[in-house]
Image (tube, rainbow, N blue to C red; front, side):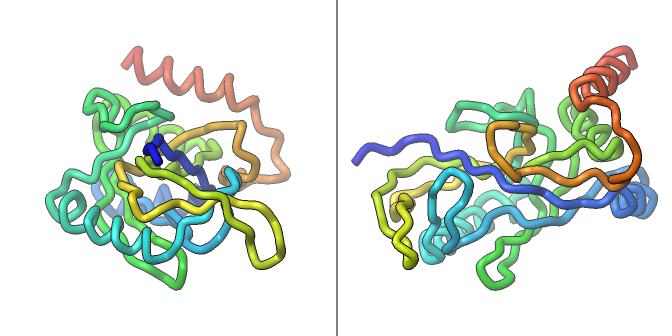
Length: 199
């Protein structure tokens, strides 16, 4: 079976309070924590990642990327099996398991894409975290009889990217001020990007 690019998005929940605390405690640098991936549970794309498949790949990723400070990710959704350094926005500095949840600590970089990511976080924009990898899938039935596809042992983890992909239901942060009317996300994102580009 041939490998294809597998991309799966989930919410990355960080409150603006925690974001502001991180910036003040780390001399202006933003460090965020959240769930990067989940094993043994069907995601929005109908895929299930077996725990042993993720354990193996996360172990390799920790050894070869995280410990060598090159666990880079991009801002937005590249359709590539390599990380483009021009678009690197963050670096995973730590990962660990809590049950079937893979938790991670992410350092937002002072790159052009990282500065955009930092401003999006500070503005309360809803973001998702996307795992990117190469692998094959096989059809399976869940315990409740539902159809799903299972990611196979040939899976290779490439990166975790921050995205705002509206096609994936439920893969976003909730605004912190639910009762306050928010401007449209597109308008807010455009103004943030424009202000960063103007310096």
